[in-house]
Length: 146
Image 1 (cartoon, rainbow, N blue to C red):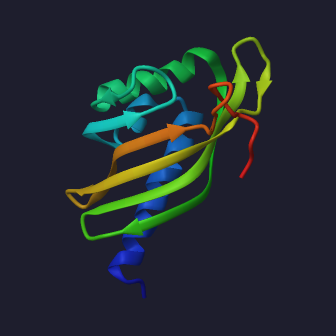
Image 2: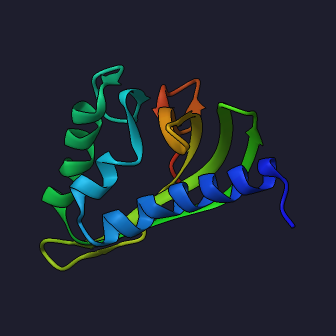
Image 3: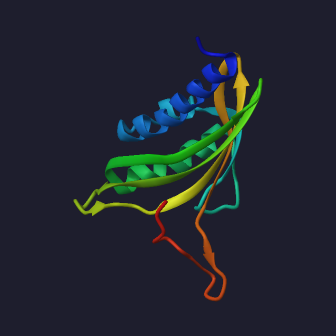
């Protein structure tokens, strides 16, 4: 039998897994349901922050303008789960086939999740995506792998 904490962690892992499913299916509405209405996202694309579910959805919609097929994977997801809030970190990679037919493996990024339990469902309230920075050049390092 699972403890409530183990059940919560399992639900969070399923929610994070749904990101890959909804991207593969190009299901923007499904993606929106994974986030709180007031989500704050610090993504790799400008601006500095995307505030609200609609802003996060517009950011994901950009993916569909470039990719014919989308592959999203998460590696090494580590979670700390409380009663109503949780946080986690992982590596993620977005790739697939571009509209012109070119296959793109994508780059690994670091991602941090902050989640809240809303009406019994774990939703992403904050995420932050980053790449390591090479200080001397000021450029992101996109060739690293977990």
